[in-house]
Amino acid sequence: MKKNILVIGGSYFVGRVFTMTLSKEGDYNVHLLNRGTYRLSKLGIEEHICDRNDIFKLKEVVPPLDYHAVIDFCAYSPNEINTIIENLPGTIKQYIYVSTCSVYETTLEFPKTENSPQISVPIPGPAGDYAYNKHLLELETQDVCQKYNIPFTILRPAFIYGPFNYAPRESYFFKLILADQPIPVPDEPLALFQFVYATDIARIIMACLSNENVYNNSFNLSAPELICYDRLIEVLTEVCGQKIKPERKSIDQINRDNIPLPFPLDQHEIYSGSKIANLLDFKYTSFVEGMKKTFAFYKKYKVSN
Image 1: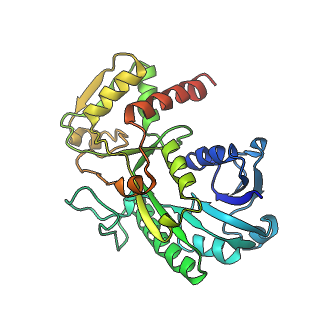
Image 2: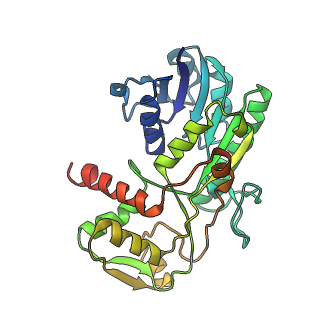
Image 3: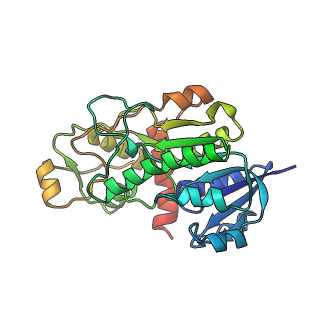
């Protein structure tokens, strides 16, 4: 008998990559809960159109099934996970919440592991609100899942890149390269940061389904390669196959001119993603390989269409 999987927010970026991966497996009935902006019904996925916070609609549109797992990609505000678990028709055997590595405090201890201290108070700015709310939602996941005796798994990705990325990260550089424009970079690339390929996240979630080794635990998702802006330029040169024109600017100038560089300028963001890699015997996709595939996807779907 096929197992029922409910994906919340599974039509956008990483959720879309995972849902498309899951739909190719023959062992699952894939149910998708979203607001209907991006449809995936043509893949044989059962879509249930609803705002996750609309309790009455939720009970109306979601069938009361035995859900083998719920994978939640889009909980951003406190009480959203509590609302799902307390009001979802049917039963839940596993809850997987996709959080973020942004929940950690700013420290000088690297790499940050799953035991590193998390932010405990709101931080000024939209990014700070996002990180603090994710922290609160992690606590909420643990509390409500323990209340209903549901095994949970919390996944914390580093910077995500890959197909369907709506955030102007790698696409910011792709656009400049294809337009033969210079790429602004800091003149002193001090900061080190890390990535995780969207397809790797999908593969890891697949490996977490029904896996008691990941129950009631949290994991960083971060490939081991340390990247700085100079290394990023090297990788972009390799994957794009053309000469790139870096334009060196001071960090003060970058900030003053509001140049939207998407990665840290003067502060490391280094995480250990080895805990889950060792547990699942998983190997992260290399940054060069992942970026090659991402650039090919971008050219095909973002430029020609």
